[in-house]
Structure formats: C-alpha cells, structure tokens
Length: 386
Image: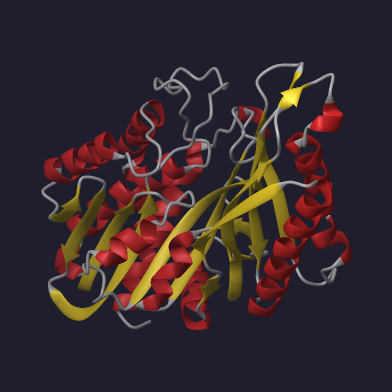
C-alpha cells in the first residue's frame, strides 16, 4: 500500500484529533476522557477494540490473509505542567499539559488504526494498536501487560515525536535506545524550632541542601565518563515560615542508567551518600525508590525492517542516538522484540523549539502523517515477512 499517501489523506482528521487531545490532557492513570474520545473515533470508523479498563484501549485489526500479530504502542498521558504556548488549542485543563507529545502519539495511533482497517482485505495477520496509559513513570506498560491481551503479539513498534530533531527526520538504532528509570523520594527528618536558636534544633534543610550537592558526585566522580548516568533532583520541599527551622525536608528525583552493573553501583553509592550525609547532620532519613522502567533495547531485525520501511515511504532513515529519557515501551520485551523509533518535530518558524516537559513545548504537525505512515509500513512489511 502507499502508506504515505494514505496518511496524507488523513491529515485534516489527524490534526483535528491531535488538537482535541491537546486541549483536554489528563495525567497518568486518569486518562478516562481521553480513552472515551479514542473509542468514539474507533466506533465512528467501525474499528473493533478491547476495553479492559477505562484508560486502556486496544484496537484490533484483523487482516483477511493469514499471518502473525504485531502491535503499535501509543501512550496517552499528560503532565502536571501549566501551558504557556498561547496556542488557540492550548490546554483547557488548568495545570495539566501535553508537554511530551503523547497527544500526537495518540492521534497517530488513531490514524494508523483507520488506515490499517481500511486496508484489511490486503493485510496479513493481525495488528493491535495499544493506547497505553501512564507512561510517565507510572507503570502503564505493565498495566497493559497485566490484562493478558498482548501475550500473542510477535513484535512491538513505537514512535516518539522528538523536539531536538528537525521536523520529518526518521531515526532508529539497534540496541539501547532509552535508559532505565527509577523515581525516588528521600524524606529527611530533623528537629524543628525557632530560627533564632539553631543550636537546639536539627535543621533538615541544611542537611538536604548538602545532600543535593553530594549526590552530583555520583556522576562526576564515581561513574566512568564513558558510561551514561543521570542523577537529578527535581523537587525540594521544606519549611513553612522564614523564622521556623523546619522539621522535615523532602527531595524527589530520578536515576537513569543504561547498564546493569552501573545501575547496581550507582544505587549502592546513592544509599551510602544519603546515609552518611544524614548521619553527619544528625538527621533521620527514609528512601522510597520506585523503579519505573528498564532499558528500551531495540531488536536488530526490527530496526533493519524499520530502515527499509522508511525508504519505502520516501525517507532516508538516520541513525538515532541513545537518550537518558526513560520509556516503559521497552517493558513489552517481556513478550516479544521491540522497535522504538523517533520522528523529529522541531521547526523554528513555528517556535517548535522547546524541550519536552517545557510549558512552551509544541510540535510541527506536518510530521504527524509521516510518523503514521512509518508505523503502518512497518506493520505491513513485518506481517508480509519482508
């Protein structure tokens, strides 16, 4: 099939879906209205789907010819970010924004389902389009796998729109594509009191401030510069008033690694630094470490197929580079090989230049049909055995 032309034919509908989803974002585990919209689109186009939960939808397209089963993953959750784009279709849900492109992924998934359903008489096998909740560190892939509805999938394909690549670039790489991700909370307890009498208090803010600095040494002095590691403190909360020494300070952050041995070493050093720093200041501490996802490891054969598919839709694929951003798409490897691809959406003329998770994040919509066509062509070629 001419996947590129079929995707371009759907551009108006694709853009409409994207803008609607952008206007009504929902955070992880609460994507109920988002999935109601997805299901309305599938119903309108006569596409069968499974709905095991209010925020999990799996479109099922059965080809007329025999073959295997492959899947497309589209994540659906947004972030706790207040939008500052000024777009006419900006978020209408205060404090919530699609600042990572998942609205685009969802719209792409809907379009893929429509194209594949229309072409089912010439398709081999079965394609499942998975509309997944809670990708943002909230174990959404696991929730999908727990339904038992993707156990029969032989290959998984996923696309992420990417703000640092020029609009229309198609990128894929064999091996590690994104990092393992852990989220943590460190709760530090001291002894509260009057700000004028620090000698009879135990100040957790001073302790937490020292710990923020100490933890940066994990990357700069305890990890090889040839091994990618990230330790980020994203949240620091403590205190209620300028003249009160707080009783508690709370740090939240993330650890990213790409190698199992490095993972073990980093976590050992993290625990030791928290212990030693808190003890030196006379504070107590609790660590809540929450694994979010493992390394996304791309299958060699699927990546080779993706490169051929890119050429078939008229694009020369580029070699992707590893990223320390985590994505639980890789967790689907528990059932079958995966191929995680990225599509550029950067366009300076449209001010589509801001990083993911920034309040002014936006995309070049002209890249959306290209992403849909690439996914469709991957599925078609995989199921035909080429």
